[in-house]
Length: 465
Image 1: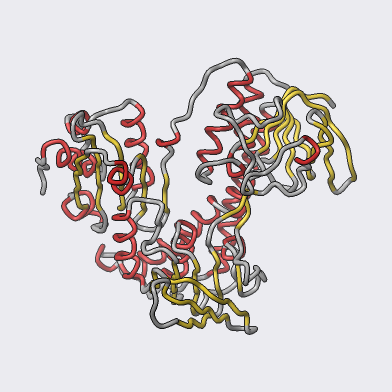
Image 2 (image 1 turned 180 degrees about the vertical axis):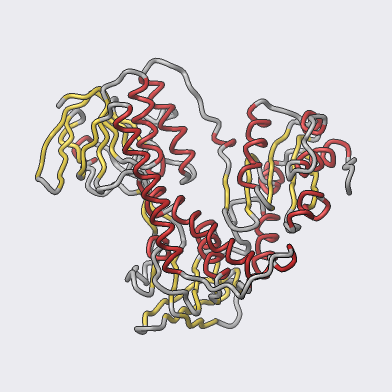
């Protein structure tokens, strides 16, 4: 079988690249090693975790907020089995949707492990044996896998990754989370909401350390209300499965007494590694750089017809970043000249309140010596937030001190994940804080906090604070 473009990996980067290639008239093949399409994101990542986050937030509201709203019910009980079942239904609907899109766009799907024979020939090894296809161009989109600690491999029973954390058959009595980044905080909050004791051990001195530090500080403050405990600035030295108990030992990186935590599950969420196993890259002369596939600014590898996108290349490991790169490569192959501004790829944490950020952090601007001004506005001063009882959080706007151009938007609060799109749009068009401040925002909405923060940044004149 001969194709114009073959995509290896069907996650958000891969399937989006395949669809865009097909739209542009290329005969396209998609290779996926698993029986279902969608990769980590749809099967064991973004989508199922959001399903559980939503279910547990409903439970939390029923247990703690319904009475204030005048809704009287018997004490709710968390049915983890039903939550997992609903999550599976959400995943199936999304996965089936991707399969439909493949058929709609006449993309031929091959199930099995794809590996290079040479730069134009791919061997596919599946349940029914081996076959080979030939192709003019190849897009590698094989994603990433959770990183284990060198002294504590995943046993998938007590020492678990995010994959197993999405399939637990019981609510943990004490969940120990190693890593206070996005995945650790999201899944930690899932189980804290339904009654688990959750302890988070983080090596850095701040939660979600890649984002603006003010966001991590606020996130810790609000998640402590769920009963979550935090050990920041601690280095884990050992993780031991004792059968029905996990013992985690850690010591402060700046000195002090070591700690020992005992729980029934330990979630290791210290990052992810690019997944290139079985690709046969050595057969086409591609050598990895710290586990990643080296690419140029056009996402082309050293082999002239082979491209790579998403988690296997440099940059943030985000589904929407992979999607943009998939589109970029497809359109370049069609002779177009697309672009991506990597500084404007937003990051989101789907706790409640949500956290969302785009552009430069305050720490980056200080390190660069760039003159800037900051405007903040708290949710508690927002009419919409008072109506919904979502008073935690704030919006921070960073703008150039001289030109007033918006340099960063940082939000922690209700619906931050959706609101950040407005920040991305504003920055794509190089809007000033004054531009947004003079744009009418519907009342009452959460987005008014963005307008007020822009007012604070541009002339220190917020209306409602």
